[in-house]
Length: 62
Image 1 (tube, rainbow, N blue to C red):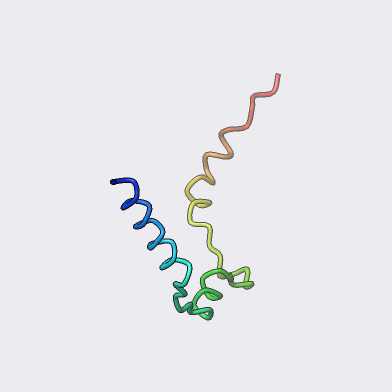
Image 2: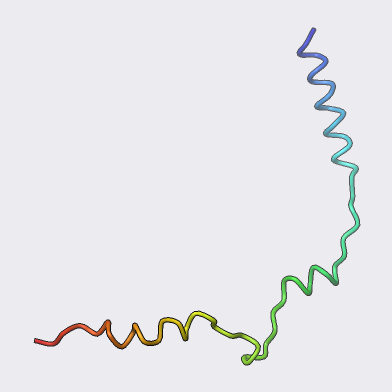
């Protein structure tokens, strides 16, 4: 008896999900997925921190 009731619940849920259509804010989605083409807007905050270490990491020449 338990399996029939469980299957009925899954069938009911599947029908509800099939007919469910949420509203989508396409403008907000576009803003989130696009990025600025202005190169100056990107700032690498970590580049200044490791700038001095790069000079010391050069391999010794033999």
